[in-house]
Amino acid sequence: MKNIIVLGATGSIGDSVLSVIKQNKNKLNLLGITFNSNISKAKDIINEFKLKNVYSDSNESYESLMRTFENNYDLNILRDKSELEELLNKDDVDIIVSAISGFAGLESTLMAAKTGKTILLANKESIVVAGDVVLPLAKEHSTDIIPIDSEHNAIFQCLNSDKNTDDVSKIIITASGGPFLNKKITQLSKVTKKEALNHPNWEMGAKITIDSASLVNKCLELIEAKYLFDLDEKFFELVVHPQSIIHSIVTFIDGSSICQMSNPDMRVPISHALSGDSNRLSLNFTELDFSTLKLTFQDFPKDRNGIVDIAREICKEGGSSGTIFNAANEIAVQSFLSDKITFDKIYDVIYRTFDAIPVSKNIDIESVYEIDIETRMEAKKVVKSIS
Ligand code: NDP
Ligand code: MG
Image (cartoon, rainbow, N blue to C red):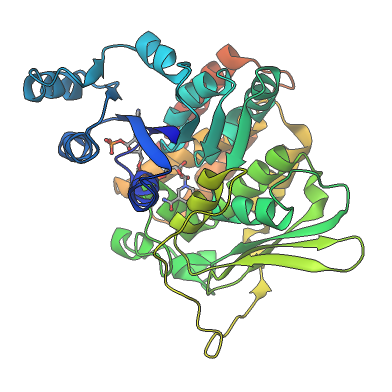
């Protein structure tokens, strides 16, 4: 039996992880969750899984849990971060799923990196903002990081669940193109939130759905891939594949290309990662119908070259460059979702903010937090100036 803690269990990735656990109750056990504000969903999870441990940063959530579960002596409602850290380090914890969205996921990913357990990583932002800190920390503590972002999990599967890339000649990361496939940036000034949040293939949280619509998600994923597979950015190519059936392709030095395919369903990469070194877990999935399958590919749109160039620069430079890029993007996304800017201005906020903040080569965790705050302030100024 593998015991699992899910950080960010009330979100979209949380749903998929819980669904895989439910289908494999003889092998997987949900030992604890964290969440932020979705109290009713957290309570449902506690009841359904007869949960032993729960943590939320929010006082309101904590107090509500205390009121509801005051007579449930089997449930441990954690009060503060030191108790969460203690839980993550307990001997019976095997797997920690990092599924909080955005920069907010960094703190608990860092905690998990120090445990020597296995992290299933969805929170790509923690690698983008602090790859130079998170990966050495995980290495120091012999913590395994297994990707569950579908493209990265696909690469991992193509590499035979290994990160040895000695024989790799090229890796193609596929992109669906999102709801605005084939639209130029200049055609995006009037798109609505509803349109931007309506992804054609994937159901996901709001932040990553906007990132997918802007294609910034692919830039974050390029940086994530560079760090997770420790490969130079020039090995990676971004290709649009609107059907989201092939999740990535690895070409080896002998000319063989291997890809991983499935319908777009996050439970597939998650179940692969949860199986670890054992046999695959069984999953109630929709089979691909190869008799009707049409797979198409097209170039990544040229008018997004500017943001891809920034992502490639970040892969080469490291340091605080990813921290700046991520903070600028998070403010741009929030500003679009709160009607302060139009969709096309997301790019302007990123470009102008990225240009305004100098990059530091050497970072530590304190400087990441400082640079994140400084960048957010600058990005908010840019938003004001263009809205
Ligand atoms: P959601 O917005 O659906 O869920 C986010 C989760 O994080 C919720 O449990 C939320 O709690 C919690 N959370 C949000 N803010 C905070 C905070 N400040 N402190 C603590 N917890 C917080 O996001 P997704 O599940 O879509 O995405 C999660 C991560 O996985 C992201 O990094 C995303 O890029 C990545 N990912 C997601 C994919 C997907 O299919 N959804 C695919 C590939 C990667 P609450 O709801 O209780 O407020
Ligand atoms: Mg992805």
